Amino acid sequence: MNTELPEDPQRRRLRERLEVIQIRTDKASSWRDAVRPLRFLLNREGFVPIKTRLASTDLDFLEASRDDLLAFSELSLRLIDLHQPRDAGGITSDTAHPILRCRSCMWRWPCPTFRAITEAFSIGHDMGS
Picture 1 (cartoon, rainbow, N blue to C red):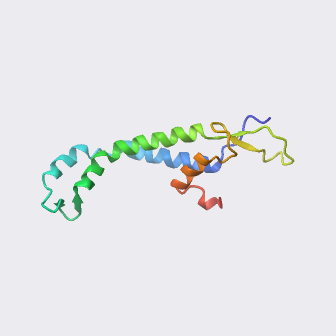
Picture 2: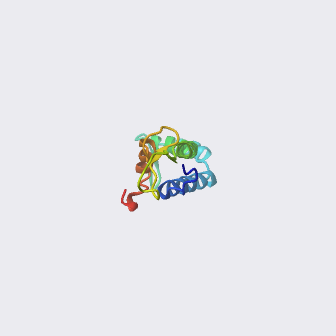
Picture 3: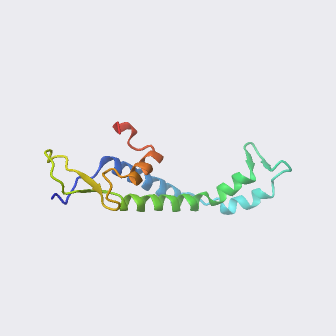
């Protein structure tokens, strides 16, 4: 049984994209403090009268988006660390392409969890998968 598998290119691209999101989000300024004074500018229609119309729901989103995105990217990275391919150890006539299963859920690779994450981030569409 082959224990060292080459890195799955689709998994590598997903991890790279999530790490970029995480780094960019971590470097970004939080809008939490900036949103407070903007709330006082809300007019009767519920918008801040500037060039861009910001509703109170927009301010709610901006206020929490950095923290939410950091948590979401961390969750996604942890999920792809859990759901990664491993050699299933089955007999195959194509030794260059062994049968793979997910280390975590044991579904055939790519597992439903990994496919859902890659679809959400549109990773792999350029690979013909």
